[in-house]
Image 1 (tube, helix red, strand yellow):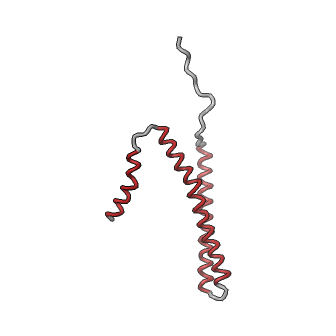
Image 2 (tube, one colour):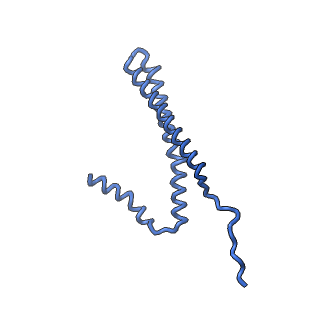
Image 3 (tube, one colour):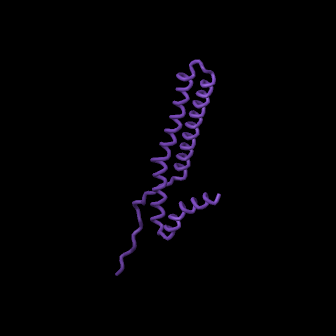
Length: 119
């Protein structure tokens, strides 16, 4: 348990070092984290679910030709792959619905107010 707390502190230390930043850096950090999740993490999770499904198909049809235990294992893996796909697509859809209903937009409006000129 002590090693786990040291490991957690080692990973959290850079965040504490970056604690005194202005708002624009926090915004760019947040958007970079979101972009990392969207461009790396989500495709990796989809790929893992696809590989689990394909491995289940392989076990069911190829390896489990005469072995009923391998066929059951393959059927179970195919089911879990499909459940994983369903959950990921559902969460992705809910996030997009929430994002569309709240209208989160990072664009600056074109009609930015101007200050009157000083005389």
